[in-house]
Length: 189
Length: 189
DNA sequence: TAAATAAACTAACAATTGTTAGTTATAGGT
DNA sequence: ACCTATAACTAACAATTGTTAGTTTATTTA
Image (cartoon, rainbow over all chains, first blue to last red; front, top):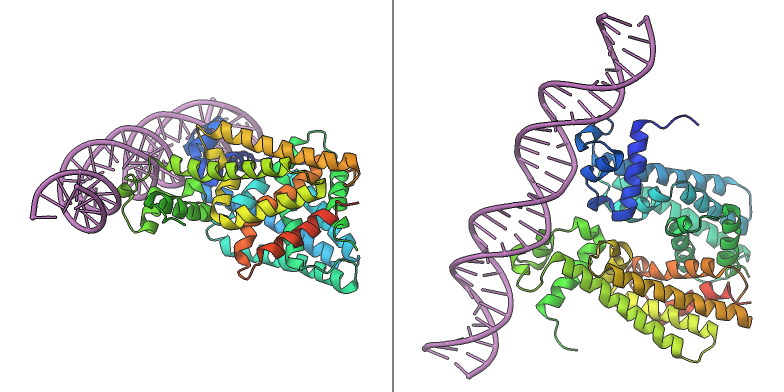
């Protein structure tokens, strides 16, 4: 892996602060202090505070979209697709715990990228719902409102970032399969 | 029901704004504008912005604590206790959609009340975990890590506020039972 | 109607915000 | 040793922040 640029380092540290206090409560002086420099120096590397948020959120949202497209095009059955979605969330959340906090809590502070983000999210949820509906149609999944099922599963997965860092000794494979058991067995007929 | 005081009205409107943009991003001028008055006038009714947040969060947190204590002292079996917890979350979340957003996202901006809030939350989670462990011991519930189960159920319930307002025609009884089916049947042996 | 209370107002404050301009120090390649 | 690019610095800005002081208006009570 290539070395992290200064810009990437700033964005990484910013995401950490954003997770703790939220985008709006973190000042450029906070961020600079955490980097050991002065606030003005940040602007040698980034264009604006807003840009940092855009970068954090959009790159993650695109990673989720990409993952979903891959899962969708796989010829697995519905339950296996759900398991893959769970793995996707566990993987991306554990790789970027801090970014996930911004994605969940600070997306409304996007500006130019807001519309684009919202489209990605809606498309993701549509794809998710489609998988559930297929599963209901084929009899793999119990026939309860797909919206409620999606909500239940997706909010659990979206909140993984809160919880992953608390389990230091966490085995990600094991977490995925435990989650699959809990989330899916309740769905599986 | 007695008429809402001006103070209560301010807090209700504040919670709505806090849900949309988060505590830190909402200014007292925003809040005043939403109330149709000037920012300074707010201070005839409230002591500080901080106080508003304290009020919103602590009253809700105490309602959850109270609910949990009631459930705990009931002599129901474990599955029934879980169903009651689900009903508690559906009830409080639907009664106070906006407050739930602050509870979830802005608790870290509490000041004097922060420690107290954290104690309430930890106690609540401990009680929740105890119920699951009882259920495992008595064979009502599958024997997987209670922490993961609790996380999965609790994050779903804690996120209800995001989702409830989207379903206008929502029947709360029906939602509770659908959620029970989804969340519990996966746990029930 | 007079007095008292509640709730709004204007004006201003000190602190903090994101950001810019202009300058200096550091380090690597020639 | 010199040059160049990188990355830090100081100083300052205009705007916005929560909040206070003092005053006026509106409503209720006696």
